[in-house]
Length: 429
Image (tube, rainbow, N blue to C red; front, side):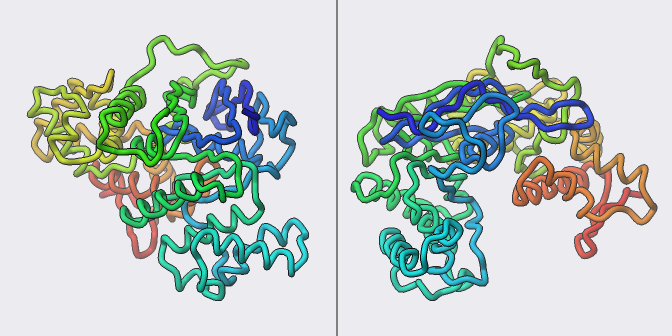
């Protein structure tokens, strides 16, 4: 099969106070005609950064990204992107939103209208051409995003968690329609690369699942070929076996991982870019710690998810949070409390706060907020100050989630308070 995208020795890092902050290191990847590739990983694994490198939106620090054998020197004209948060222009109609990419390429009005109407019909948006984004549901907005990407008939469709902002039923419906189009032969693109953190979604959609790991930089941990015919039966033994294999790889820890190439080394101290906070509340991670303690401190995550009636993906943020705080260790699909985690889970409210504060206070974002307040004015600091700093490393949606988690953790630890009305952080006491 023809290789449409080829990634060779890609590294990506950002300049920081502690030197180069590694995000990706030593990535080798190809995307071939006729396949769907899923980039799967937890927060901080660099999967969205890799997708943007494939799109030519950000350049690699070293290595190359090539489209049909030619290294990219800017935006990839053979690819189009679908974003998690729709990214529609609210003052334009559905038709005008779909035409935007063609207009930017200089396509004449009559031709771009014809192409846009064709894409709108393909994606099931007939009748909504004159509607504005505010009139549409989340699912319909994402359909506009699909139509806008497909109207240019790109070789490769790049999708960054396209279903994660939707409710469960809408996401399921759109996934099914996407696969039906792909299988029908009417899809105007030759390959798809989709970023996801959902293991089942990756195995359901992809012909190949590429698992990225972090700690302390993003690398390809493993690649799984998915030979199952479509439509795929979630209850089939082969499907379940693949889910389990991918899950154990994603939640396990690499032993003896090689150092990254090109002299890139992880910083001696955790960094803001390299240590994202998982989307886990204090109540959620505390609850998991208590459950682990009742299981004598160690449990298989697959067994625990079955016991609780949850998807594995629902537990991963809480697991990541416990591990980041030093309260748990993950290996081979098992999670076990550390001594600090056992003490945290067994303590009363007052003592648990002290234990939590000691651990959370060492995390880069929470340490940044606390230290800035200690050294700042008595009136505290506006949230916008921290948003601007985080914006160098995260998307706007990720910035919001990072600050929400930091605020929850910092308040519980009594490291600082937050006035939501005035969007201002202050020191407690």
